[in-house]
Length: 186
Image 1 (cartoon, one colour):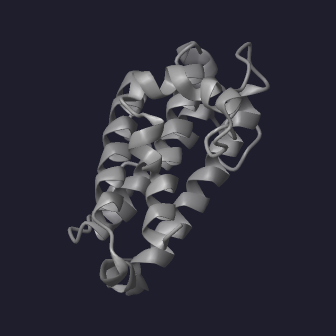
Image 2 (cartoon, helix red, strand yellow):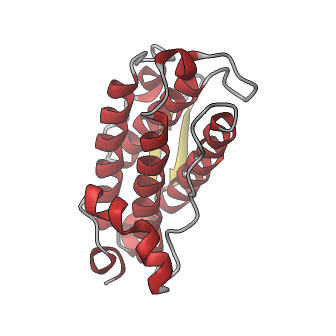
Image 3 (cartoon, one colour):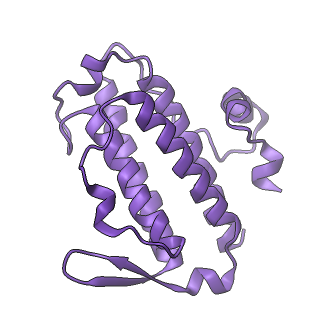
């Protein structure tokens, strides 16, 4: 698998995992979403907003139009779950579209990431790897917080295996997302 294919598969996995996690969170009441919990961020809605704003921060930089720290103002842009879900789906699509355009030259290209005190300069491939790891990290926190609710946390590790039984586990999600095994793996 080429680095470009790998990163594109990661972008699809990111969108699928977000879809599964958000589908479970959709079942929570506003009270459950905002309830104080033990984690890096103090609630599910706060963590979901963080996942979203970090996507805005990095995807805009990858696209060459960095919004910088404005991505984090306000820290929690959406109190309503429906708004977080809508915006997360939109940024997931932008990330997939960006990864579809990758080639060896763009992966090696340096991008500017505005920080508070300086402009960080990083290769595209390294920022993408960082972004995917960041999202996995925080989805795991939401997953753990769901364990303290009435909603069962979703399985988030059924994306990559080619086995037909594994494919069946993601088929409904793929249909909802407009994905297919052929689209992702061919």
